[in-house]
Length: 405
Image 1 (cartoon, rainbow, N blue to C red):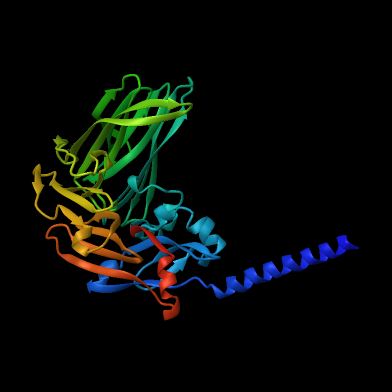
Image 2: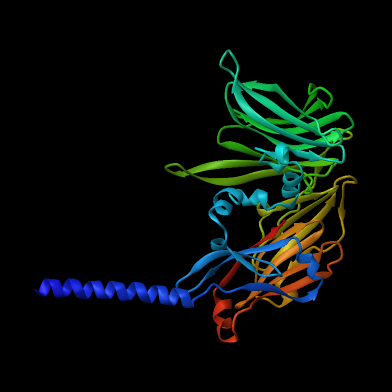
């Protein structure tokens, strides 16, 4: 009999605990936040979204916030979560959405902005894949799709560009058009050989006119080269320049399957599609406690911006690759300028510096003109909830990232 009483009491306890959970879960609704403008033009936030998360007593969820309000991950349907937003890093880009809306059939299956080129006459997409030749040798195949904006005609071309016994990777870095020629910048690694090539393609028939090797190096034992292309930040607009970034790294084995990567050298080389000229660019050296190998780069036309961020400042340097000279402008945006404790993150886009700032439980976003240092916008994250809950709501808000659409 005693055993049955214990079972009954346990059942009552479980039901009461579940009931309490749902009661408190209903009471704790996820708060609505928004950016409240302190100074400047709120239109600076039209293409900006702040990502972070809310961590309450019983609920936590990822969120996106702007000047209008908040959207939580739970607000999305299963279709939006698993299909539409599966590649949010890509689909969240305004350029990609515009192309998808205007050219839905052409865009099907295309997932890399690096392979796109667009002007008023042509929409072009290039990609690579690895196949095997009849004699079982790997070959890299260049795939090109051309859409004539006036006739709406789409043509597809496929051609073999390289053969090797062992490809590690091959990828598109940039695509540009000059007249009836399409220039496709490709990086690749085969065994210990690292290369940059530009393939010049006849727009009228898809044949390769020329293959120019821009850079080639063979790595020694334990050395690796990290090749990347800094292309025009507005991916769907023409750009005369691209910048080749070459990082030489040494991989030191520290345990079973683990390595420590040591940066040995880094080079930046600008390339002009119009003239074919290659120019070595100067690198900014260490400043303060911000390491040189943590730099990020943005190319806007002929202006190459580099920036490095730590918890106190974002350091910015701008360089004109066309005239091979450093540009004047803001060199630092710091926490001291805004009387805050921490810089959560910083970024540069289209000659503007974007920073996410924190002071105690107060969180801010600011936009600074990179050419003049003028503050274009400053806003604070606020809660739209009842005054009695605002303090708790702000304690539980954690903004982490500025998403520039």
